[in-house]
Image (cartoon, rainbow, N blue to C red; front, side, top):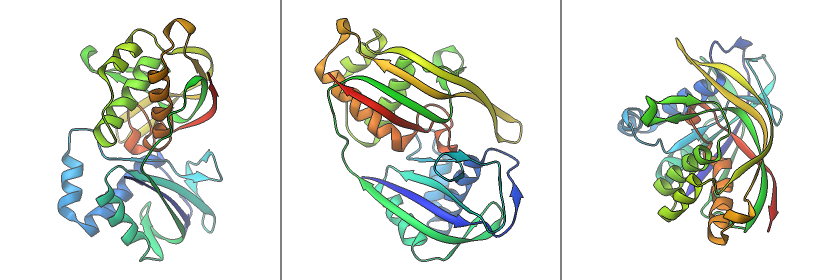
Length: 259
């Protein structure tokens, strides 16, 4: 069961973020978990596998990611957990307080929205368009964890498939083989790269913008098209690629065309 939180707060002071604001959101999550269950927080922090959560940076309005907050103004961020136990613990805490400690200060907690998601619709998609809201990049482990700031379909959907299998359901191994055979192609893009600081001394570069994809006639497979649709919907909660626990790789599916 995926539990998705949208947290709205009012800044108590004006303050610049000295690093990417998604890293502050990640820190906030660990701060809350330490207050609830220190052992769980330490286990999550030391876990070298796929982390069971994703975050967003701080937003003002729907899509505007900010580099500072201003006293008295309203902001929001999101947290998504893939483990119901963690989600319920967060819910219990966030619905019991009226202020949150974020960015080194106590801020008024204006509203918390909680959404439960236990399934993802699998449509028979043919074409789709994704908006990459925050910088996205991929790693290639067998090349010394080389960073790739490009919307390569194999890397994008393999990243989503790993998370989906870890926390939702298994997928046929033939799907990954289909991806590697260019089952999905890029049909157009309007992107740019952005460089962000995740922590002191650690910079990352990723792409943002709109990318159109299609499943060509000669690779079309109904089952794999439905799996692709499920992964797209899942990705709107999980983020994709590297740094997703610090708000990187946020996506929104702008358009889906059925076969």
